[in-house]
Image 1: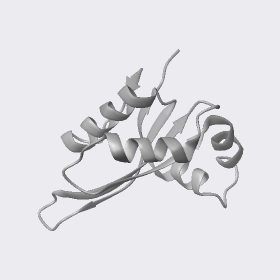
Image 2: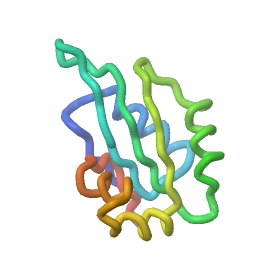
Image 3: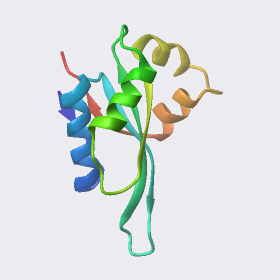
Length: 109
């Protein structure tokens, strides 16, 4: 596995590590983050791409119930085949994430 972390944000780093421990994702992207006027993190959204055969909505619920975060955090989960299908479509959310999000983690074989 390989991590790519934005700056030194320990909250996002810990959440990424928690997710990798719970579901062994293929990739994790930082979709967006919100900061207050002091530059402190106040919320963020992650996109988690998992292998085929895992139900995205079930995993999303599992992540929400089994992770803790000191700021609001949201997830969107894709199966790898759905991700690959949509990441090439410039009208899709997956395309915007792949081209504008920040890669935090990628699973290396």
